[in-house]
Image (cartoon, rainbow, N blue to C red; front, side):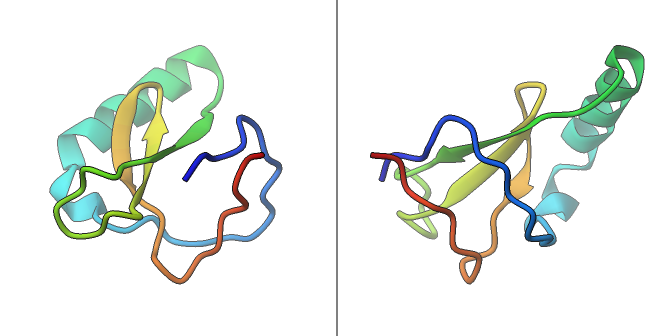
Length: 77
C-alpha cells in the first residue's frame, strides 16, 4: 500500500501503542516545542509482526504510535 505524500486529514483519532513509546514521544514533543510545531508522517509498515497493513505515525522521525485499524487512510495513486 502506498500512501499519499501529503494529506489534510480532519478526522481525529487516538494513536495506538503510545504507552510503549513514552521516551520517543517525550523526545518528539520536546523537539516540536523548540521548533514551533509538529508534523505527523504516516508510513506503511508491512514488516509489522502484528499487522501487515499497519500504518506507523512519526513526529520528527520518532515513532509515536500507530493508526488504529478502523481508521481509513486514503491510498496514493
